[in-house]
Image (cartoon, rainbow, N blue to C red; front, side, top):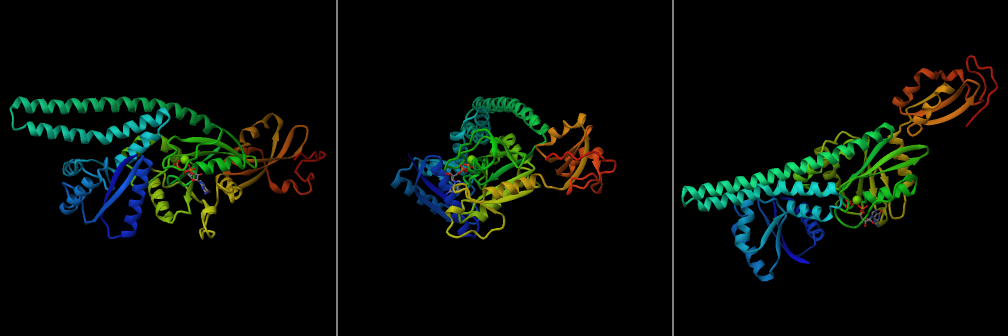
Length: 436
Ligand SMILES: Nc1nc2c(ncn2[C@@H]2O[C@H](COP(=O)(O)OP(=O)(O)OP(=O)(O)O)[C@@H](O)[C@H]2O)c(=O)[nH]1
Ligand SMILES: [Mg+2]
């Protein structure tokens, strides 16, 4: 395992929050396969524009590096290029910041072609300004020389920029073609009228475990998704169809969030994040056994707003209750994917939110039109009440917009006595042949 020194500057006067953030960066180091051998911090109103740490602290860091011989310095704060270079010069050790660390973790987790391309795109976009800066620096060194030298340096920069730009363009093109395929699959799914919910939340909160638990407790198609005790186990969206009380819904498992998720990653994972943007309901999974859950829940909801999913209704689900000593005092669904406590109630709640029983309508449908009920069975509850030679009387319950499709066959409720299954329907004189 590589050894790292974790460095950070607390910019606000909130020690508790800073310590929590540093703990999170330490766990990101662990996720990237780094052992944090020491931590060094400073309280300051701003980063020094050249060296991030003020000079005394930088010397302290240099001494610490001599004593402990780390492979890497990981900076909790985002570093400008010149800061990275100066710290490197002062300590003789490579320096990365939190964004670069997260990009490394994503790179090590990416399995699908789409995820690999997305991570490469994010990495190139992060690296490009840095590489150009170091090229410019080199040509700056040459500036004392001849006009010929200066020209050579600038040409090198232009060449590097062109190479990056052409790879970035190629990646975007390839990703766009994968997107088209995914969108075609999505269009096919939308035709079924099934409503969609996306599992969102902080990384490691239990989103994938919840999808598996929901599948366990319902009729569902598809194999279980990978759940693992590691940050960013899921990078690819998975979708599963779940049936409950005759209603089908699509549930999407998505990539987890973390504080200050790098913008290059949000941009590169644009299409992966679409499953959250296009959902009818967001199931916000919260690890309630983690003391800092309120802060993480807030970060998740902020990130959802940032990616353009801020207006979608959210159902908060408090997971891992088996790890809590007392039942958490929260309003919303409390569940444990481990013991399956609360999962049935949650399923009911998701189904209720996705398919609100806004309307109950009685219809008389001629047999040659009865097949239309099949198309709506996944989104409406359909009860067959009575049949005669030409038609069938049915009761449908569900969202108004789907019930509206049956408007022309509608019976007024008082024209049919559903309790006695009798023939109080206007012209109904036939024998009741109740079908349930
Ligand atoms: N004790 C306990 N552990 C749980 C529960 N739910 C999930 N876990 C564990 O928490 C860890 C993370 O679960 P995942 O389902 O992979 O979490 P995730 O939110 O999908 O994480 P990412 O995909 O990395 O964002 C795994 O080790 C799970 O076994 C729970 O209810 N109780
Ligand atoms: Mg997951």
